[in-house]
Image 1: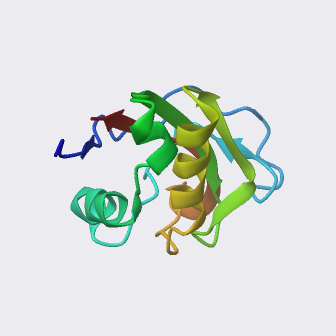
Image 2: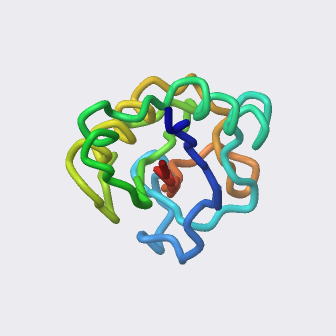
Length: 133
């Protein structure tokens, strides 16, 4: 039997400038670069563990031998919650894999929020999912 291996690599946030140059209300602004990035409980190791434990290779995708890297972008709000209204697949592979990546993002626990000038801010985060058989 072919053993399915799901490799999760290149855990990285997006590195660009803030969308809104005015910081009159930090709850409305969403940043790409911040002084302190959001942190998953347990750090990068905790994030990798969460992804490995919760990502299930869709059976239909496995049967059709569909592979590839899906990249999901989502916002971590000032309370550390993943905002699923902002979540989107920015590098799709196949609807089955894309949906699985979004599902895993939707069940993430609360993060430690990113900060700018010592205050919590909304931060966009990109997360790749490498699906390999």
